[in-house]
Image (cartoon, rainbow, N blue to C red; front, side, top):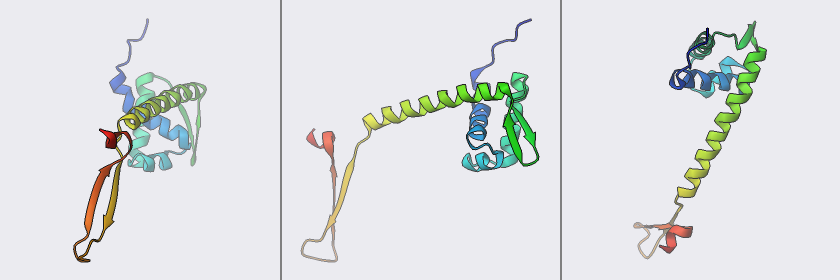
Length: 125
């Protein structure tokens, strides 16, 4: 009997948490990175394991390790997330405007002049 396809939306948030844990190899440190409690992140990873029906991490006393399946999923998910982050950064970088801010005082020292000018390609329009 085959398993139904998982809804991508149902695994994205727990997968993000799992990748953060894998990058830091610490639930506590990863939770801090994500502004979550350790308990909340641990529950996310547990929910992902339950949803997939496999163990991803071996939890020890103050330590974690990947299962073989967890290592495989981490490598794939980490790579995919990094690729998405790089693509989004590149797209935003192409559309980012730079503004030069300068202040000067002309005559009356109590009334400084604040000048805003676009830089680069934007300034030539």
